[in-house]
Length: 144
Image 1 (cartoon, helix red, strand yellow):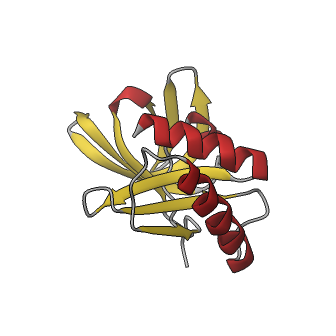
Image 2 (cartoon, one colour):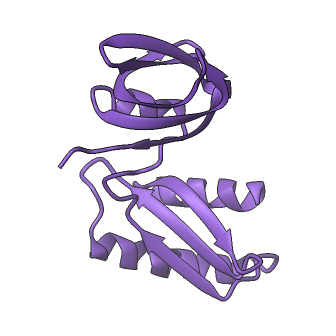
């Protein structure tokens, strides 16, 4: 899977897209990709990437799949890379931890940035420093 991830990141990067997340389902027969670019994603982007990757994966004989899905990450996009937390500083996010901090594993707050190995998250007016190694899941949580 790491080889596939590296192949996809490299190929999408050359097209000007970022691989936000990848899901494999049905024993790897379904590849679901979430892509983004600074100005956002539309259906034409999904079609372009789908066609490009279908051709690329056809050449890679060791990648066996039946279906490829391309999608935008949505308004509640997942945050995985340090650069995601930097890019979305000032936005509201939900962060789930592996191990509790002060008795809590779930935080909802404003992303305030990154400080070396820590995410700085403001919850109820108090800044929390959360080690990236302790983050299980994080995603934007837009208010409507």
